[in-house]
Image (cartoon, rainbow, N blue to C red; front, side, top):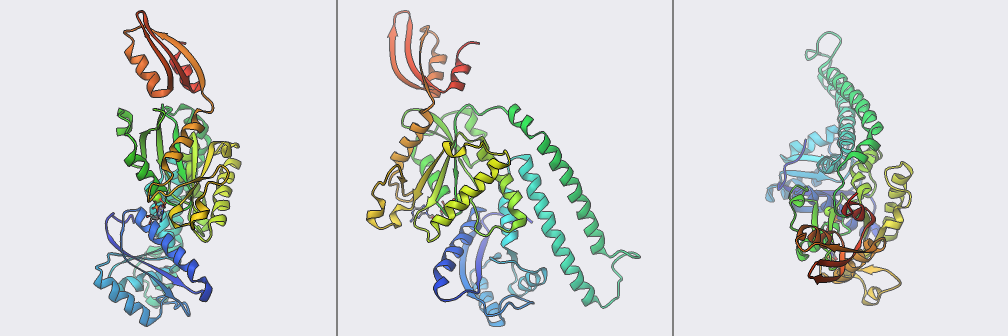
Length: 420
Ligand SMILES: Nc1nc2c(ncn2[C@@H]2O[C@H](COP(=O)(O)OP(=O)(O)O)[C@@H](O)[C@H]2O)c(=O)[nH]1
Ligand SMILES: [Mg+2]
Protein backbone atom coordinates (compact mmCIF):
# COMPACT_ATOMS: atom_id res chain seq x y z
CA UNK A 1 0.00 0.00 0.00
CA UNK A 2 2.94 2.27 -0.63
CA UNK A 3 1.82 5.77 -1.43
CA UNK A 4 3.44 7.18 -4.53
CA UNK A 5 5.58 10.24 -4.03
CA UNK A 6 4.57 13.81 -4.83
CA UNK A 7 0.88 13.20 -4.12
CA UNK A 8 -0.98 16.14 -2.63
CA UNK A 9 -1.80 15.34 0.98
CA UNK A 10 -3.71 16.67 3.96
CA UNK A 11 -2.58 16.04 7.53
CA UNK A 12 -5.28 16.05 10.21
CA UNK A 13 -4.63 15.78 13.92
CA UNK A 14 -7.64 14.81 16.03
CA UNK A 15 -7.06 16.50 19.39
CA UNK A 16 -8.93 15.68 22.56
CA UNK A 17 -6.92 17.78 24.96
CA UNK A 18 -7.74 21.42 25.47
CA UNK A 19 -6.40 24.71 26.81
CA UNK A 20 -2.72 24.74 27.74
CA UNK A 21 -1.99 21.66 25.64
CA UNK A 22 -2.32 23.78 22.50
CA UNK A 23 1.44 24.12 22.07
CA UNK A 24 1.88 20.35 22.36
CA UNK A 25 -0.77 19.99 19.66
CA UNK A 26 1.14 22.30 17.33
CA UNK A 27 4.34 20.32 17.94
CA UNK A 28 2.56 17.05 17.29
CA UNK A 29 1.02 18.38 14.06
CA UNK A 30 4.44 19.61 12.93
CA UNK A 31 5.81 16.13 13.54
CA UNK A 32 3.04 14.48 11.50
CA UNK A 33 3.58 16.96 8.65
CA UNK A 34 7.31 16.22 8.78
CA UNK A 35 6.67 12.47 8.66
CA UNK A 36 4.36 12.81 5.67
CA UNK A 37 6.85 15.04 3.86
CA UNK A 38 9.61 12.52 4.47
CA UNK A 39 8.02 10.12 1.97
CA UNK A 40 7.68 12.83 -0.62
CA UNK A 41 4.05 13.83 -0.06
CA UNK A 42 3.25 17.47 -0.75
CA UNK A 43 1.25 18.78 2.21
CA UNK A 44 -1.30 21.27 0.96
CA UNK A 45 -3.55 21.31 4.01
CA UNK A 46 -3.00 20.62 7.71
CA UNK A 47 -5.20 21.20 10.72
CA UNK A 48 -5.82 20.32 14.35
CA UNK A 49 -9.38 19.03 14.70
CA UNK A 50 -10.77 19.34 18.23
CA UNK A 51 -12.62 16.15 19.20
CA UNK A 52 -15.45 16.21 21.69
CA UNK A 53 -16.33 12.56 21.29
CA UNK A 54 -14.95 9.78 19.09
CA UNK A 55 -17.67 8.90 16.61
CA UNK A 56 -17.51 5.13 15.92
CA UNK A 57 -18.44 5.57 12.25
CA UNK A 58 -16.19 8.46 11.25
CA UNK A 59 -14.16 9.48 14.33
CA UNK A 60 -14.91 13.15 13.56
CA UNK A 61 -18.31 14.78 13.97
CA UNK A 62 -20.61 15.19 11.00
CA UNK A 63 -19.92 18.91 10.53
CA UNK A 64 -16.17 18.29 10.79
CA UNK A 65 -16.27 15.55 8.16
CA UNK A 66 -18.05 17.97 5.83
CA UNK A 67 -15.72 20.93 6.38
CA UNK A 68 -12.58 18.78 6.07
CA UNK A 69 -14.10 17.31 2.92
CA UNK A 70 -14.53 20.80 1.48
CA UNK A 71 -10.87 21.64 2.16
CA UNK A 72 -9.78 18.34 0.62
CA UNK A 73 -11.80 19.01 -2.53
CA UNK A 74 -10.53 22.57 -2.82
CA UNK A 75 -6.90 21.52 -2.38
CA UNK A 76 -7.28 18.50 -4.69
CA UNK A 77 -5.89 16.26 -1.99
CA UNK A 78 -5.17 12.64 -2.98
CA UNK A 79 -4.21 11.30 0.45
CA UNK A 80 -5.57 12.32 3.83
CA UNK A 81 -3.45 11.35 6.82
CA UNK A 82 -5.31 11.12 10.11
CA UNK A 83 -2.75 11.23 12.91
CA UNK A 84 -4.56 8.73 15.15
CA UNK A 85 -5.60 5.09 15.08
CA UNK A 86 -8.57 4.57 12.80
CA UNK A 87 -10.75 1.48 12.80
CA UNK A 88 -11.16 -0.11 9.36
CA UNK A 89 -14.75 1.08 9.36
CA UNK A 90 -13.76 4.69 10.09
CA UNK A 91 -11.09 4.54 7.42
CA UNK A 92 -13.53 3.28 4.79
CA UNK A 93 -16.27 5.73 5.70
CA UNK A 94 -13.87 8.68 5.57
CA UNK A 95 -12.55 7.53 2.20
CA UNK A 96 -16.11 7.51 0.88
CA UNK A 97 -16.98 10.87 2.39
CA UNK A 98 -13.84 12.62 1.18
CA UNK A 99 -13.27 10.78 -2.09
CA UNK A 100 -9.57 10.24 -1.41
CA UNK A 101 -7.26 7.68 0.13
CA UNK A 102 -7.17 7.82 3.94
CA UNK A 103 -4.38 6.40 6.09
CA UNK A 104 -3.83 6.51 9.82
CA UNK A 105 -0.68 7.00 11.92
CA UNK A 106 0.39 3.36 11.94
CA UNK A 107 -0.14 3.12 8.18
CA UNK A 108 1.98 6.21 7.59
CA UNK A 109 4.82 5.04 9.83
CA UNK A 110 4.80 1.62 8.18
CA UNK A 111 5.20 3.32 4.81
CA UNK A 112 8.14 5.35 6.04
CA UNK A 113 9.86 2.33 7.53
CA UNK A 114 9.18 0.31 4.40
CA UNK A 115 10.91 2.93 2.31
CA UNK A 116 13.89 3.17 4.61
CA UNK A 117 14.57 -0.43 5.59
CA UNK A 118 18.00 -1.21 4.19
CA UNK A 119 19.12 -4.43 5.77
CA UNK A 120 17.33 -7.68 5.06
CA UNK A 121 16.45 -7.86 8.74
CA UNK A 122 14.92 -4.40 8.56
CA UNK A 123 12.86 -5.26 5.50
CA UNK A 124 11.57 -8.48 7.06
CA UNK A 125 10.74 -6.75 10.30
CA UNK A 126 8.76 -4.04 8.51
CA UNK A 127 6.88 -6.56 6.38
CA UNK A 128 5.99 -8.49 9.51
CA UNK A 129 4.61 -5.39 11.19
CA UNK A 130 2.65 -4.58 8.04
CA UNK A 131 1.04 -8.02 7.91
CA UNK A 132 0.19 -7.89 11.59
CA UNK A 133 -1.50 -4.58 10.95
CA UNK A 134 -3.45 -5.94 7.97
CA UNK A 135 -4.51 -9.02 9.87
CA UNK A 136 -5.88 -7.04 12.78
CA UNK A 137 -7.87 -4.93 10.32
CA UNK A 138 -9.30 -8.03 8.64
CA UNK A 139 -10.52 -9.39 11.93
CA UNK A 140 -12.29 -6.22 12.80
CA UNK A 141 -13.89 -5.61 9.43
CA UNK A 142 -14.90 -9.25 9.31
CA UNK A 143 -17.10 -9.03 12.38
CA UNK A 144 -18.53 -5.86 10.95
CA UNK A 145 -19.26 -7.41 7.55
CA UNK A 146 -20.79 -10.51 9.08
CA UNK A 147 -23.22 -8.34 10.93
CA UNK A 148 -24.01 -6.34 7.81
CA UNK A 149 -24.45 -9.30 5.58
CA UNK A 150 -27.07 -10.74 7.90
CA UNK A 151 -26.13 -14.36 7.34
CA UNK A 152 -26.37 -14.73 3.56
CA UNK A 153 -22.95 -16.27 3.59
CA UNK A 154 -22.70 -16.59 -0.21
CA UNK A 155 -19.08 -15.41 -0.34
CA UNK A 156 -17.12 -18.27 1.18
CA UNK A 157 -16.98 -21.97 0.58
CA UNK A 158 -18.51 -24.35 3.10
CA UNK A 159 -17.24 -23.41 6.56
CA UNK A 160 -14.79 -20.79 5.33
CA UNK A 161 -15.54 -17.21 4.43
CA UNK A 162 -13.25 -15.24 2.14
CA UNK A 163 -11.95 -13.34 5.12
CA UNK A 164 -11.11 -16.50 7.03
CA UNK A 165 -9.15 -17.63 3.99
CA UNK A 166 -7.33 -14.29 3.85
CA UNK A 167 -6.52 -14.54 7.53
CA UNK A 168 -5.11 -18.00 7.07
CA UNK A 169 -2.91 -16.84 4.16
CA UNK A 170 -1.61 -13.88 6.14
CA UNK A 171 -1.03 -16.15 9.13
CA UNK A 172 1.07 -18.51 6.99
CA UNK A 173 3.07 -15.63 5.57
CA UNK A 174 3.70 -14.28 9.08
CA UNK A 175 4.91 -17.67 10.28
CA UNK A 176 7.28 -17.91 7.30
CA UNK A 177 8.62 -14.39 7.89
CA UNK A 178 9.26 -15.17 11.57
CA UNK A 179 11.35 -18.19 10.57
CA UNK A 180 13.28 -16.14 7.99
CA UNK A 181 13.90 -13.45 10.57
CA UNK A 182 15.30 -16.00 13.00
CA UNK A 183 17.63 -17.22 10.29
CA UNK A 184 18.79 -13.70 9.41
CA UNK A 185 19.41 -12.94 13.07
CA UNK A 186 21.46 -16.08 13.53
CA UNK A 187 23.72 -15.13 10.65
CA UNK A 188 23.79 -11.41 11.37
CA UNK A 189 27.22 -11.44 12.93
CA UNK A 190 28.57 -13.39 9.98
CA UNK A 191 27.03 -10.98 7.48
CA UNK A 192 28.41 -7.99 9.25
CA UNK A 193 31.91 -9.36 9.27
CA UNK A 194 31.69 -10.36 5.62
CA UNK A 195 30.13 -7.16 4.34
CA UNK A 196 32.70 -5.19 2.41
CA UNK A 197 33.65 -2.32 4.62
CA UNK A 198 33.03 1.08 3.12
CA UNK A 199 36.50 2.60 2.85
CA UNK A 200 35.56 5.91 4.51
CA UNK A 201 34.30 6.75 7.98
CA UNK A 202 30.51 6.87 8.19
CA UNK A 203 28.93 9.70 10.15
CA UNK A 204 25.23 9.04 10.86
CA UNK A 205 22.66 11.69 11.78
CA UNK A 206 20.24 10.46 14.44
CA UNK A 207 17.54 12.23 16.43
CA UNK A 208 13.85 12.95 16.54
CA UNK A 209 11.76 13.56 13.48
CA UNK A 210 11.79 17.30 12.74
CA UNK A 211 15.04 17.89 14.64
CA UNK A 212 16.50 19.04 11.32
CA UNK A 213 18.55 16.01 10.24
CA UNK A 214 17.63 16.21 6.57
CA UNK A 215 18.05 20.00 6.49
CA UNK A 216 21.52 19.58 7.96
CA UNK A 217 22.28 16.71 5.59
CA UNK A 218 21.38 18.92 2.62
CA UNK A 219 23.24 21.93 3.99
CA UNK A 220 26.42 19.91 4.53
CA UNK A 221 26.30 17.96 1.30
CA UNK A 222 25.28 21.06 -0.64
CA UNK A 223 27.96 23.37 0.67
CA UNK A 224 30.85 21.00 1.07
CA UNK A 225 33.03 19.83 -1.76
CA UNK A 226 31.59 16.62 -3.13
CA UNK A 227 33.79 13.64 -2.99
CA UNK A 228 34.56 12.45 -6.48
CA UNK A 229 34.46 8.74 -6.19
CA UNK A 230 32.83 5.91 -8.05
CA UNK A 231 31.67 4.49 -4.75
CA UNK A 232 29.34 7.39 -4.06
CA UNK A 233 27.47 6.90 -7.28
CA UNK A 234 26.20 3.60 -5.91
CA UNK A 235 25.14 4.88 -2.49
CA UNK A 236 21.48 5.54 -1.96
CA UNK A 237 20.31 9.16 -1.74
CA UNK A 238 20.45 9.26 2.03
CA UNK A 239 24.20 8.70 1.98
CA UNK A 240 26.61 11.20 0.47
CA UNK A 241 30.33 11.62 0.45
CA UNK A 242 31.74 14.95 1.60
CA UNK A 243 35.22 16.29 2.22
CA UNK A 244 35.97 17.78 5.63
CA UNK A 245 38.16 20.90 6.04
CA UNK A 246 41.16 18.65 6.79
CA UNK A 247 40.69 16.99 3.40
CA UNK A 248 39.39 13.79 4.96
CA UNK A 249 36.51 12.16 3.11
CA UNK A 250 33.54 10.90 5.07
CA UNK A 251 30.16 9.44 4.24
CA UNK A 252 27.26 11.31 5.78
CA UNK A 253 24.17 9.20 6.41
CA UNK A 254 20.69 10.60 7.06
CA UNK A 255 18.48 8.25 9.08
CA UNK A 256 14.78 7.85 9.68
CA UNK A 257 13.87 9.93 12.71
CA UNK A 258 12.61 8.90 16.10
CA UNK A 259 8.87 9.30 16.42
CA UNK A 260 6.92 10.32 19.50
CA UNK A 261 4.43 7.77 20.82
CA UNK A 262 5.58 5.08 18.43
CA UNK A 263 2.90 2.35 18.35
CA UNK A 264 4.41 -0.54 20.34
CA UNK A 265 3.92 -3.06 17.53
CA UNK A 266 6.28 -0.95 15.43
CA UNK A 267 9.18 -0.71 17.88
CA UNK A 268 10.96 -3.80 16.56
CA UNK A 269 10.58 -2.61 12.97
CA UNK A 270 11.92 0.79 13.94
CA UNK A 271 15.02 -0.63 15.58
CA UNK A 272 15.71 -2.79 12.56
CA UNK A 273 15.55 0.21 10.21
CA UNK A 274 18.03 1.96 12.49
CA UNK A 275 20.58 -0.78 12.16
CA UNK A 276 22.58 1.30 9.77
CA UNK A 277 23.73 3.38 12.72
CA UNK A 278 25.50 0.28 13.96
CA UNK A 279 27.85 0.66 11.00
CA UNK A 280 28.64 4.27 11.77
CA UNK A 281 32.00 5.47 13.05
CA UNK A 282 30.40 8.56 14.57
CA UNK A 283 26.81 9.37 15.55
CA UNK A 284 25.65 12.96 15.42
CA UNK A 285 22.68 13.31 17.73
CA UNK A 286 20.75 16.22 16.23
CA UNK A 287 18.45 17.92 18.72
CA UNK A 288 15.73 20.49 18.18
CA UNK A 289 16.88 22.83 20.94
CA UNK A 290 13.80 25.00 20.49
CA UNK A 291 11.25 22.20 20.94
CA UNK A 292 9.16 22.34 24.16
CA UNK A 293 9.98 18.66 24.81
CA UNK A 294 13.65 18.82 23.88
CA UNK A 295 14.86 17.24 27.15
CA UNK A 296 12.36 14.36 26.98
CA UNK A 297 13.25 13.79 23.31
CA UNK A 298 16.91 13.60 24.24
CA UNK A 299 16.34 10.88 26.83
CA UNK A 300 14.07 8.96 24.42
CA UNK A 301 16.81 8.88 21.80
CA UNK A 302 19.45 7.85 24.32
CA UNK A 303 17.07 5.18 25.64
CA UNK A 304 16.58 3.65 22.17
CA UNK A 305 20.32 3.64 21.47
CA UNK A 306 21.01 2.06 24.88
CA UNK A 307 18.34 -0.54 24.07
CA UNK A 308 20.11 -1.34 20.81
CA UNK A 309 23.39 -1.65 22.70
CA UNK A 310 21.74 -4.07 25.17
CA UNK A 311 20.64 -6.22 22.21
CA UNK A 312 24.14 -6.21 20.78
CA UNK A 313 23.08 -4.22 17.70
CA UNK A 314 25.17 -1.23 18.75
CA UNK A 315 28.46 -1.28 20.60
CA UNK A 316 28.17 -0.77 24.35
CA UNK A 317 30.35 2.34 24.23
CA UNK A 318 28.34 4.06 21.49
CA UNK A 319 28.22 7.25 23.55
CA UNK A 320 31.99 7.57 23.14
CA UNK A 321 31.43 7.77 19.42
CA UNK A 322 28.69 10.36 19.46
CA UNK A 323 28.36 14.11 19.43
CA UNK A 324 25.31 16.06 20.49
CA UNK A 325 24.37 18.93 18.21
CA UNK A 326 21.88 21.58 19.31
CA UNK A 327 20.02 22.69 16.19
CA UNK A 328 17.59 25.56 15.45
CA UNK A 329 19.69 28.12 17.31
CA UNK A 330 17.95 30.80 15.21
CA UNK A 331 14.78 30.11 17.22
CA UNK A 332 16.49 30.46 20.61
CA UNK A 333 16.83 33.66 22.62
CA UNK A 334 20.21 35.21 21.84
CA UNK A 335 21.89 34.48 25.19
CA UNK A 336 21.04 30.77 24.93
CA UNK A 337 23.22 30.43 21.85
CA UNK A 338 26.43 31.59 23.55
CA UNK A 339 28.83 28.62 23.64
CA UNK A 340 28.42 26.77 26.94
CA UNK A 341 30.92 24.03 27.66
CA UNK A 342 31.47 21.77 24.68
CA UNK A 343 28.01 22.21 23.22
CA UNK A 344 27.86 22.43 19.46
CA UNK A 345 25.15 24.95 18.61
CA UNK A 346 24.04 25.32 15.00
CA UNK A 347 21.24 26.39 12.74
CA UNK A 348 20.94 24.02 9.81
CA UNK A 349 18.57 26.52 8.23
CA UNK A 350 20.76 29.65 8.35
CA UNK A 351 24.12 27.87 8.33
CA UNK A 352 25.26 29.29 11.66
CA UNK A 353 27.80 27.04 13.37
CA UNK A 354 28.29 24.64 10.46
CA UNK A 355 32.05 25.28 10.08
CA UNK A 356 32.46 24.56 13.81
CA UNK A 357 30.46 21.38 13.45
CA UNK A 358 32.64 20.16 10.56
CA UNK A 359 35.76 20.94 12.61
CA UNK A 360 34.34 19.00 15.57
CA UNK A 361 33.65 15.98 13.35
CA UNK A 362 37.20 16.20 12.01
CA UNK A 363 38.61 16.38 15.51
CA UNK A 364 36.58 13.41 16.74
CA UNK A 365 37.59 11.27 13.81
CA UNK A 366 41.25 12.15 14.11
CA UNK A 367 41.42 11.43 17.84
CA UNK A 368 42.49 7.86 17.10
CA UNK A 369 44.92 8.66 14.28
CA UNK A 370 48.56 7.65 14.25
CA UNK A 371 51.28 9.84 12.79
CA UNK A 372 53.39 7.91 10.28
CA UNK A 373 56.04 8.72 7.73
CA UNK A 374 56.60 7.02 4.39
CA UNK A 375 59.12 7.32 1.58
CA UNK A 376 57.34 6.81 -1.72
CA UNK A 377 59.05 6.44 -5.10
CA UNK A 378 58.40 9.48 -7.32
CA UNK A 379 56.44 7.41 -9.81
CA UNK A 380 54.03 6.12 -7.17
CA UNK A 381 51.47 8.88 -7.56
CA UNK A 382 48.54 6.55 -6.93
CA UNK A 383 49.67 5.59 -3.44
CA UNK A 384 50.39 9.21 -2.57
CA UNK A 385 46.90 10.17 -3.72
CA UNK A 386 45.51 7.35 -1.59
CA UNK A 387 47.18 8.84 1.49
CA UNK A 388 45.67 12.24 0.72
CA UNK A 389 42.22 10.72 0.44
CA UNK A 390 42.32 8.55 3.53
CA UNK A 391 44.53 10.44 5.93
CA UNK A 392 45.72 13.90 6.84
CA UNK A 393 48.98 14.72 5.15
CA UNK A 394 50.75 17.04 7.57
CA UNK A 395 54.14 17.33 5.84
CA UNK A 396 55.46 16.54 2.39
CA UNK A 397 59.00 16.78 1.06
CA UNK A 398 59.49 16.17 -2.66
CA UNK A 399 63.04 14.87 -3.06
CA UNK A 400 64.98 13.62 -6.05
CA UNK A 401 64.59 9.99 -5.04
CA UNK A 402 60.91 10.26 -4.15
CA UNK A 403 58.41 11.83 -1.80
CA UNK A 404 58.93 11.89 1.96
CA UNK A 405 55.49 12.23 3.49
CA UNK A 406 54.20 12.50 7.06
CA UNK A 407 50.57 11.51 7.40
CA UNK A 408 48.00 10.84 10.13
CA UNK A 409 46.11 7.61 9.49
CA UNK A 410 43.44 5.55 11.21
CA UNK A 411 44.73 2.15 12.38
CA UNK A 412 42.54 0.35 9.82
CA UNK A 413 43.89 2.51 6.99
CA UNK A 414 47.44 1.94 8.13
CA UNK A 415 46.85 -1.80 7.88
CA UNK A 416 45.42 -1.31 4.37
CA UNK A 417 48.26 0.89 3.21
CA UNK A 418 51.26 -0.99 4.53
CA UNK A 419 52.11 -3.96 2.38
CA UNK A 420 51.32 -7.00 4.43
N1 LIG B 1 14.13 27.57 12.34
C1 LIG B 1 14.77 26.47 11.98
N2 LIG B 1 14.10 25.47 11.39
C2 LIG B 1 14.79 24.36 11.03
C3 LIG B 1 16.18 24.22 11.27
N3 LIG B 1 16.56 23.02 10.82
C4 LIG B 1 15.46 22.42 10.32
N4 LIG B 1 14.37 23.23 10.45
C5 LIG B 1 12.99 22.97 10.03
O1 LIG B 1 12.49 21.88 10.80
C6 LIG B 1 11.63 21.07 10.00
C7 LIG B 1 12.11 19.64 10.02
O2 LIG B 1 13.37 19.58 9.38
P1 LIG B 1 13.92 18.21 8.76
O3 LIG B 1 15.30 18.49 8.28
O4 LIG B 1 12.96 17.64 7.80
O5 LIG B 1 13.96 17.29 10.06
P2 LIG B 1 14.25 15.71 10.18
O6 LIG B 1 12.93 15.06 10.38
O7 LIG B 1 15.11 15.57 11.40
O8 LIG B 1 14.95 15.26 8.95
C8 LIG B 1 11.63 21.69 8.61
O9 LIG B 1 10.50 22.50 8.51
C9 LIG B 1 12.91 22.52 8.59
O10 LIG B 1 12.81 23.62 7.73
C10 LIG B 1 16.86 25.32 11.90
O11 LIG B 1 18.07 25.32 12.14
N5 LIG B 1 16.10 26.41 12.23
MG1 LIG C 1 14.47 13.69 7.69
